[in-house]
Length: 116
Image (cartoon, one colour):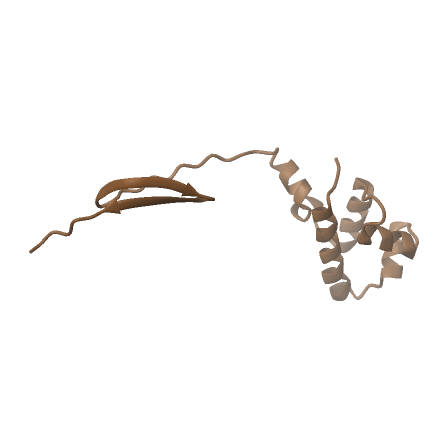
């Protein structure tokens, strides 16, 4: 599975958050992962590829679940599922025009209020 820049950004954000909480240095984390500090830095910066082995070790050290953290893994876990939804609305009037603008459906209608 190929991880993306979006995944790398998520890893970096997790690292920045967890290292402060755990009071761990980049040097110490690199050592725990069996890497040099330079190798670890290159992976986080995007100068080196991210492997699943790295992700697994990295997340384990930071006590986070990779499948709830990385966007690519989240999508894969869902099986690339597409959920189809349907909405129905009742219009209090006569529909004149319906059109789509991005992710919005615009309904133009006329309404004649009842006179008491």
